[in-house]
Length: 192
Image 1 (cartoon, rainbow, N blue to C red):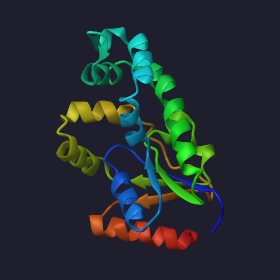
Image 2 (image 1 turned 90 degrees about the vertical axis):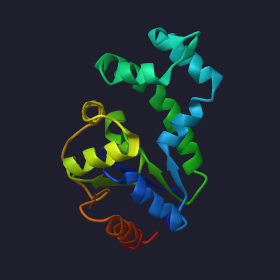
Image 3 (image 1 turned 180 degrees about the horizontal axis):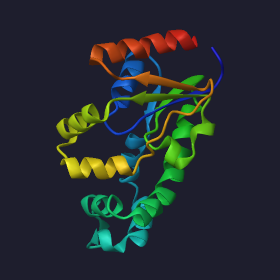
């Protein structure tokens, strides 16, 4: 086993990256989630104070309202950039400190390329899925409208997978069982 092998799993909203990571967790690997860390930060008074200072229009009684902030950032590119500049460094600092405590660690990083974080990882797994299947999955999971899902998709980089041996594309074009099988095959192929 290579020491401190940091692996990122990314993909667009609804691609299946969480299911892929859940399988890796079930196989015994330490798997961390940027989304979970973000949720933890919402319990930190200092973090919330910083958000309130950046987005006073999204506060009620001095408290940042998640729904107002989401509506703003998914309709205003400058607001989204402002949020990302504030949140991403804090999330990544926590993520990397947790990952480095393990010889091999995996992280679900939804906005990996948007944040320019790909160089922090030895291996990047990109889970892909057909757009219609992604829309259906997110609508079922989150109860969002098609317009709300489209706004979130626009906030993510839609581009061809980068080339190079550190980038591995996993196509989620079948059943959940098939995706789970691909996760197990990947760790065997990587020898971790």
